[in-house]
Amino acid sequence: MTRQFFVGGNFKMNPATLEQKKGLVSLLNEAKLDPSTEVVIAPPFLYLIPLVESIRKDIKVAAQNCYLKNVGAFTGEVSPAMLHDAQVPYVILGHSERRTLFHETSELVALKTQAAIDAGLSVILCVGETLQERESNRTVEVVNEQLDAVIAVLKESDWSKVVIAYEPVWAIGTGKVATSAQAQEIHAEIRKYLTQKVSPTVADGTRIIYGGSVNAGNCKELATQPDIDGFLVGGASLKPEFVDIVNAKA
Ligand code: PEP
Image (cartoon, rainbow, N blue to C red):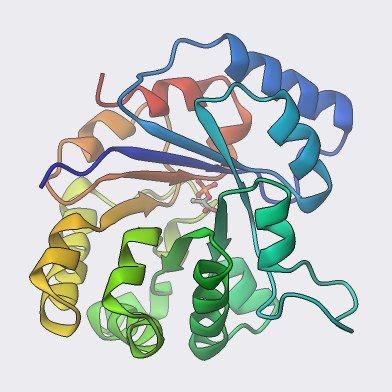
């Protein structure tokens, strides 16, 4: 199966001002983007609705998180149903910053994934190991454990709504990108795991994207790998070089 190349931009808690956000939108609206790449950008919650209204229609919008209930007394949370209602088609879940700084467990991430899919969203599901886990040769075990929790709750048909982002924690925001061989090795392991635990069809069809210090200089080489189906980009998604990353396969 041919998997459509996917590039996501995770703005995190940036940019600091609405004016800067407008600058990023104009840059993307005017850019020449490879039409065969699916492009999704994830601004902070506050900017989602204006972005849905102002961004060109071939770029989709994602939230960076959501809760697992659709309505109720959950101060400070935003629900999957609200995102769907606001015409936001994607949500990033399980980002390492949420797992580490906000203590989200793999079980919580799995429940949020299920809730998001039930509400009609697609999910960019992040997994990845810390440096310490890599150095103790636990990368595959850790990533598989993170996936186990999700595999336990999803139906086979739900997987068409999931893009897996392999993001080694040691590579996020550090400038230390995984080599294309390191990334390919883990992407192939994830695909093997999906074959065994879900089905060969899901393994073949699910996009597995890489995240961690991707930039205009390293994206083309990473994109040559057979199991790297795109990128989740943090820092570089706030810069003009994001366009080069979207066009990595062109
Ligand atoms: C991310 O936060 O998802 C990410 C990959 O960040 P960066 O590209 O800055 O490493």
